Length: 233
Ligand code: PGA
Image 1 (cartoon, helix red, strand yellow):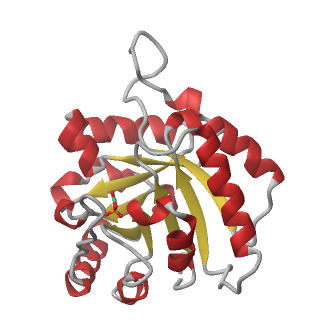
Image 2 (image 1 turned 120 degrees about the vertical axis):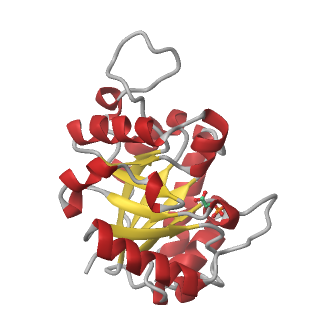
């Protein structure tokens, strides 16, 4: 049984000061409540610019549960002349996880499944765990089968379920259950997360439907709604 992986995907939100304020508020709020802290691990995926300062703060703030950092993207190339790209070698030491193939990367930045495969290879080379986002099985590169079950995480993310303009529209938990069960039987024992409009009201139902964790966009931006989800894990 995996510990549930609760991933905050801040997308293009929060500058370094706001990121640190969020972390400090999280610490202050969770210290005063009862949580099943052994059941889950938190991963914060902030914008690149926030990663070093959060990494520094996490060395001095201790939480009741494990808190790790992830990136939202990685270059498909090594170091070199690739303007705007951040390589695995540069990220090494700062992060344990990295999202790849998020539907917003596919939609707005032209990320293809071939690029996702290249990114997974770069991450594996640095021992960073890819969180492979997929709307359907074709989005998951075939090469994943060469990775050990604990060396990758898969997220079922129907693009139609992602919150829009602050409005949640989560997938039916029965569909989440069907997809996760079928993917597990085909692609193996990777931890399977669900992403799309997860919030304090539906978190329990989605976990009961088989999600082994979440990728959370909107509801991760405010500490109160993020903690509201943790209370249901
Ligand atoms: P949302 O985003 O929680 O705002 O729907 C989820 C995601 O992008 O995976």
